[in-house]
Amino acid sequence: MTSDLPPAYTALMRHPMMPRTSHDEAARFNFLTHFNRYVSGTLGRGNHLAYDARVLPALRAEHGRDPQHRDEIREGMNCDPFHRTWSALKRNSMEMRQMNGRQAVLRQLDALDAQARQYNEHSGQLELDSGIVQPEYQTCVDIHCQPGGYHGEERPGDVTVGANYDVGLFATTGGALGALNDGGGQAVVAWAKANRPGWSPRRILDIGCTIGHNAVPIAQGYPDAEVTAIDTAAPSLRYGAARAAGLGVRNIRFVQANGEDLSRFADDHFDWVQTTMFLHELSAASLPRILREAYRVLKPGGLMLHVEQPQYGPDMPLFEQFMRDWDAFNNNEPFWSAMHGVNMEQAMEEAGFDRAEQFSVGVRAVVDPSIFPPSPDGASEDYGRAAIWNAYGAWKPARAQEMAA
Image 1 (cartoon, helix red, strand yellow):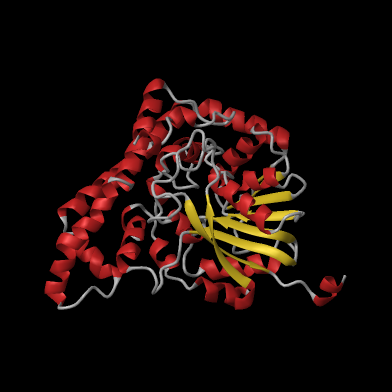
Image 2 (cartoon, one colour):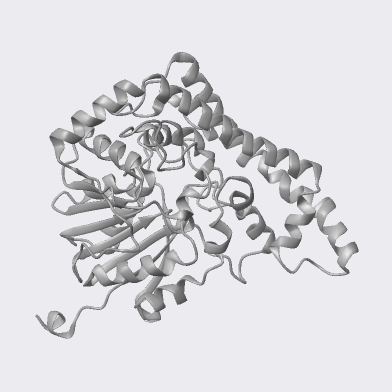
């Protein structure tokens, strides 16, 4: 049905920092947008058919029982011709997306760098720290197959990786995040306003902001708040700060900092601490450190919210766990599988939140329905194809005297 198709790449909003695409570059992105939706959706359903028809019977014959872990399913599926073909198509679509975006950015890098410098020098919304060391979990691979990951530079002071990330995210997600790739941030704002109407947070911290596409909607949704967006990657921050300035958003600052050490901020400093699809980029050692620091800088009565895909658990079928694991083994997401196996309730409790203070809720990308069709599966999230996430959150208890006041 044409109503299920993603919009044309021309629906992507051309904000002042967005790299300009030639006719051929836009046509490639347009193809990739539709191709990603088709491979992930229509073609992707064949994986379960292959599992039921061939792989599961073979595993039962080999082991004399049903699979007991997603790794057993992976071993069987990796021998199946359909799944191997599907995986190759999906991996190649990401590589093509990265190459097309990189080509477009490098062609105009001088102009992009100059424009970013101009925005950032005049706005004062960027603060870099050359003493920040890139964590090994960010440098060990090119995340998402993007050359240089989030932190690499073609030359000192450039914006290559930030611009590439922004110009191609529409194609990567099949257009599911909207015209500014900010449907995730808009979803968080919509949830917060619906669940705490009238709340006016004064200070908001976004950890692992990359180019700020999820932090900027929060700043727009709460224009009286001071939003601080941090990341370790200077090139992403340069682009993100210029992007925000170009969009006219002034109540946000982009700061180079590591979420494992927020000592620059006092205890109880922020009313809201947020991450969006960031925790799965972290190593097992860094995740609890960031959660503890986030708890420390959060005010009593404040909100901590982590937007992610659902954790693996006994209620999630093993085949679904296997499918969600695809990025860990095929898309340069080395910590994906381990992070989604973490018990987030326990991790949040060890950071300081009692179980009774925690909650889990689904949030759905907010986009213009007149342009963007619904996600492939309506209201359900399926292996990350739909722009629907699981948010793990907690309200930090207010102190007794503050509650009385």
